[in-house]
Length: 238
Image: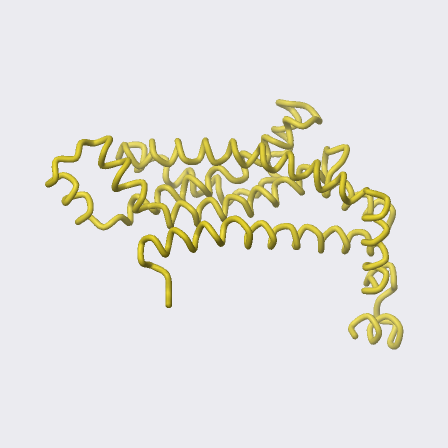
């Protein structure tokens, strides 16, 4: 309706500025038919899985180390928060200077874009553990390693999963930003091709695909994990 009124009836926008839904669907079908979209999705997901896996590893280790030592927690927590608020695209010049225009630069942007969100999820989860759990563990004779493994980590899982979910969304944004600047193929590259060709329908089609992939992964992976953990801890709503 917005297209019919704004473009065809009143002429407020030009057709190359505001895309027709029909043209977007036709472009999407064309991208699927010539396998452009399939190749882009595979390339993007491969980068995403690698970068996000590294982010999870770094984020968990950093979060555990920072919460373990009060000196680090006091001095690094604000820095971690500040780095998390910094847009991932700001790291692109560093990535290009350090790694060049290649895959490693994109992986670096993904890692730096999502690691700190996971770290903050670890911090929040551990700091919000009920002190009674820790006292009960000590009363029952649990050592430091047993307390961490059997009490702290399981009790902090809801916040950890939330941090990982946030980290995934930040990693997804970082991936597209990196691909728009330096990738030879991927969803970000197809998006930039649409911009260079002034094809607003292709730009909109790729945006729809990016949104759809994000929602699918959230529903199939993170939502299921989150529900299982909340149910295990009796935190789900009936």
